[in-house]
Image 1 (cartoon, one colour):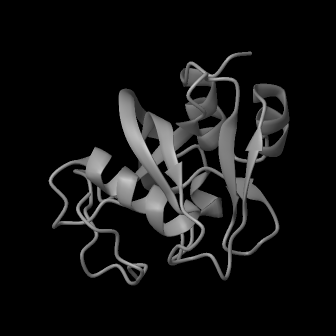
Image 2: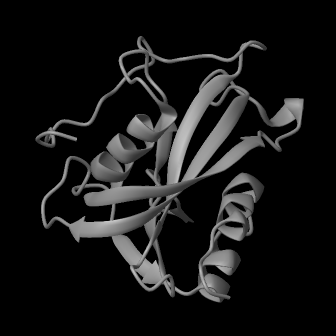
Length: 157
């Protein structure tokens, strides 16, 4: 990614959708070089910990490009994508879907964090923290799609 923007993208105008109308979401499982820790970020509400993820946009050639952008915007990290963890369907029942949180399809990538910047687009509303597998699994327990991505990664158990 040549030169990181200090502006986080907003809105859904550029959002990609799948064949069933689901929002395509890309994210990373950001691991330490030795694969003993995963970096989680605070959710936008600040009430929980999540993996960096967001909408894959039309001007991004690949879901991996979108995932790296989200890692930068939300976590202030520069990542190297290591492997595709494949699609994870949205586990929420139809009753839990809303206009602001429509059905999604998640594409996660395992990535190695190569740099942590001290300033990033969403620094004012998110913190980041390294966790072990056991800690992260507990923190992500309420988000089955994020927990599944974590389990598919090669983070040391």
